[in-house]
Amino acid sequence: MRVRVDVEADVPSLSWDDVHGPARGVVYELLSSHDADLARTLHDEGWKGQSLKPLGATSPQFRGARRTKGVYTTSTDGSLWFGSPEPRIASALVAALSTRTEIRWGAARLRVRGVALDVAVPPTSGMVELATLTPVIVKHDSRYVLPGDPHYLDRLHHNLTHKADLLGLPAPADLSVVEAGPRRRFTVRGAPRIGAQVRVAMEADGRFVEALRSWGLGLDTVQGFGWIK
Image (cartoon, rainbow, N blue to C red):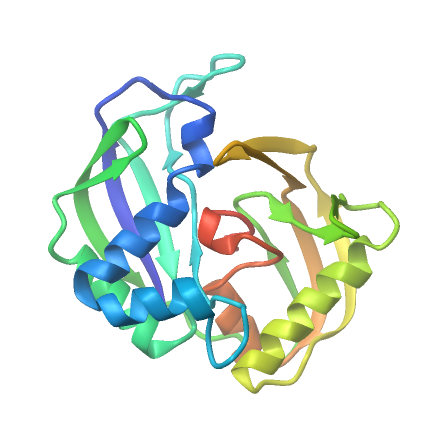
């Protein structure tokens, strides 16, 4: 399940550390406000005996923001996305968001203008293409790798297979990168995150594609990375 939250920022720009930095804290605070046991279990233990956390989110996305070099500008027409393929987690997010009038995102206050569920038609199985709204984070031997680097596809496929196993669904096959954006670097809690937006193709079960749309590609999805358009 995916949820879009329409927001309006009270500041003209976000500091670069506040683009992705607050995401994890915001997600867990939302979950804690509705189901503290769930939030604690996810944070401390992961899900179903694995360290994976089936949660996705975005950094704040602002339409019509004035383009200024080196500045992450905001506008009155912004949105955040949250999601999870697991019903208990998704329902906790929806319940928490339904009562919010404001979300504190780092130094910014985002006034909530509306909350809407994404009710897109589930895709059928077969070859699909998925494009991301935020950079995808992939690592090999503790190093960030980008599309075109050695091991990128292997590690991304490993991540997808791990997610499919957690959900009890068939793993995808024939993964390829169709298009990639520029290298992007963000700081999250004092540490770098390096990745790129991508468009990928794969042969996949429709149920898994739908799950990915509520979770994301790659690592650190709870930090706002890898969200699928």
